Structures are given as C-alpha cells and as structure tokens.
Image 1 (cartoon, rainbow, N blue to C red):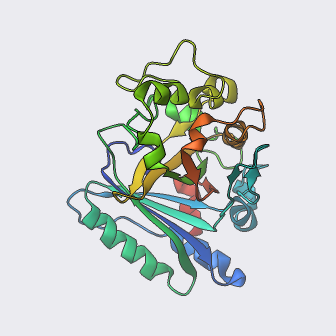
Image 2: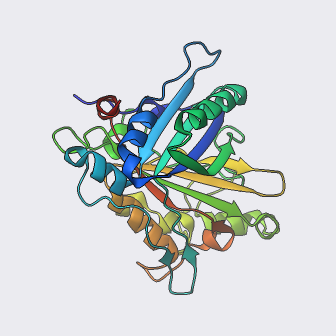
Length: 294
C-alpha cells in the first residue's frame, strides 16, 4: 500500500504559501529532487505545518521513470480560446505548498525550504493565501460546492494501487486575478447567472445559462476532481489560487478547454471577470516515493 501526502487532504488550515521553483543546473536535478523530498515539518510548532511537494511531470519522469504515470505532461502550451482568450503556461520544475494554522510558522518554514534549496533552485513564484468567510472566494460565492467528501476525495484525486505513481496525484495550480470593479458593479442576480449558482446558499440554478461557470466545469461531464482553492492578494489586487487534484489529468485539461470555449464553443462567462496569470501542472508523488529519493 502507498500513502498519499497528508497535506493534500489537510482541510481547515488558515495560512498558505505556494513556492514554485526552477532548477539551476540540469545535471543536478537528482540532487535537487533528493533535497526537496527530504523537507520535513519542524520538530516543535504550535500549530503544525502541512507540505505538498510536487514535480514538473517531465522532471519526475526523468528521475523516477518507473513511478511516473503515463501521459501526464506539464502546462507547456498556452490555452487560447476562439475569441482570443488566453490561459498562460508558466510551468516550473517543482512546487512546495505549505499550509498551517498561523502564518508565522509558514513564514519560518518557507525560509527554511529556501535555505535548503539554495544553489540548486531559484524561487520564481511565491503566493500567500488565506480562507475568506469560511468557504467563500473573493467573488462572495461559496467555492467548491461540488467537492467530494473526504471519504470520496481519494478516489477522485489519487492514482489507484497497482499503477505507476500509485497514491500520487496530478495537481493543477493557477492564479486567477479578479476584475474587482467590474464584478462588484454587477447586480447579484447577474452574478448568479454568471456563476450558475445562488449567492447566499450556493444552490445550482435550474435554468443556468450554457456559458455559466457551473455549466462549463460540470464534473458530471468531465469527471470528479478535488479542489483546494484559496483567496490570495491585497485589498486592491486579489483573486483565487485554483488548486485542483485529479487521478486523471484529462479531467483537468478538458475543464480548462471548456472554460476557454474550445469544447462547446461557449467561453465561461466568469473568465470575463477574472484573468489567469499562471498555469502549471505538478505530479505529487506518494510518501514512499519521496522517501526513496532522500
């Protein structure tokens, strides 16, 4: 039996940091992988720190080919919709996602990670985030209404036993900047039609528009994923960190294609009020796979 990284399912944490790295020397990628796999939480903390460590799929395939799921690729090409809408590709070599009960502990651990990787990799993207009104994003709507329960989430997120990469998962990480003024200028009823759900209680609209966010990301059509989205940013410049886990990368990639209008020809209406700034896929291996690299 293989064990998934515990941080994948560590719900309820109030402080988060996403650190994305690029290796400095291609000849030292094995050393980099060994070093990043050896990261551990501090021996003594008041609230604890959870880690999720992921690798660019091609890098994982290069280092541990026998434990790499077939067909998984990095976010290597931008996604461009028929009307010119673009989701950028900003693939990096590795991700360390830290979460915990307080940001001071996250801050200290993030600095420790940077110290450990000095000379092997550069930090190229850093984002901090926090929960907003329990389970809402900064549009004011409940986020993750279709998320599976923690009992069902492993089935949606983890590769099954008996296949390369067992208990690992494919992670899609995107930063979406909200167009705050335009969104907040809309009446609530129009916001609800764009989302496809009611705002106060997150009930799916019976006659939701075909270009609503719910319709364009229908998990009954594309397959179940496990989402851990979080708000990020400042008072004036903020948005959503999309964090999606899946046992099958195609579920994630088809959802993005649908949002861009490449499947049904209808672009997700929400993308007119939020702009994707980044896009990366990471393979998050099992605990046992990380141990073998240490």
